Image (cartoon, rainbow, N blue to C red; front, side):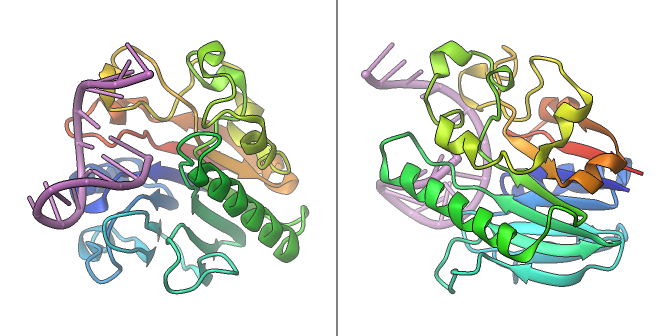
Length: 250
DNA sequence: ATGGTTGCACAGCAA
């Protein structure tokens, strides 16, 4: 079973890239973030034409998440427990082939010391509390998406310059430690990144961050065969600033 | 320290 995550940075701007990629890779499940579109305006047909079912949770302009799946999606849930209609749309969940899939777009958080940063930590605390309340470590669960957190120093290009800054601060990192970082079960390399800022030619210069993560419970970790980052996708014409991350399970 | 780029939507914000 192949489960992928990709911050597409607008599904409408990225539609040709996403449909090409789905046709080529054929993951069982693709979790998307930053779709930046309402559910009504989501370009469903082009994705459904490839054989994918689709569940969306979007809003105009900002945020938005979606799951495309080749298989039936059960118990689809949207948002965090405390969310209302005005909340930013950042979470969608579904069960596919017995695996609970929690697709998240974690708030960016701007910089430590800002209001946005405090809201990020609060959002993460609410997410973690909900996961603890509704799931057991013995469940087959994957929490994946744009975490906007680099788990370790080796996940950023310049850990000294970035020390304590957004994406790497200790309170952010602490929020992820109850689950297993799938990529690190299989790959100890430095320089494995998933996001490169559009500005300052960061991709060409190889200066990135690994902030798109696939986190799993112990039983799913046992089934993990491998995790890859599709760096080539970042080198395409009109790319997202994030690359897809792909996990394969037995 | 600031700036650089992209997307949405048509000014300026978010990332």
